Amino acid sequence: MLFTFQLKTPSHGLINITPEIREAVKESGVMEGICVVFCPHTTAAITINENADPDVKADFINGMDSFFPDLNIFEHSEGNSGAHIKSSVVGAGETIIITGGRPLLGTWQDVYFCEFDGPRNRKFYVKII
Ligand code: ZN
Image 1 (cartoon, rainbow, N blue to C red):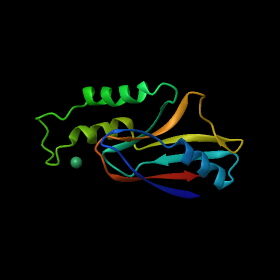
Image 2: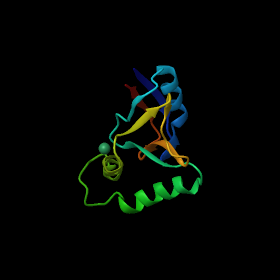
Image 3: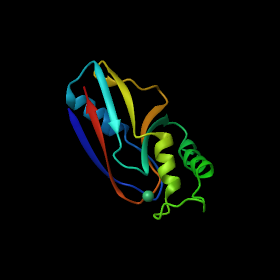
Image 4: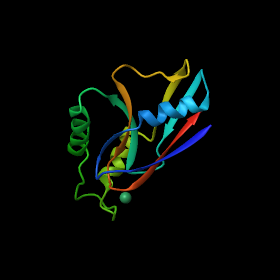
């Protein structure tokens, strides 16, 4: 079963998409299986990280900006090569085990849509098998 979700993103940041994923798993009726979360964009990504301290989200974005800045050696005319690099480094998706009809996430884990070049209208897919 394939679910498509739309979201409007800020200029950059981590958006918690765990509620949408939990709802999709519930609606699918799959009790034991696999959930694939996929981002079809080249300047955004999907990751799993801490849900307790909001500073982790800010540190994640600030760290990525420090490690992968837009450098004047880049040739890509859109001027967002840093965002393209972050997208590939973080990755386009995550795979989550489903057991007991629920996504198997750790206590401190949530799933995030990572915006590196917003604001934009974005979407992500959740495939449940
Ligand atoms: Zn570009």
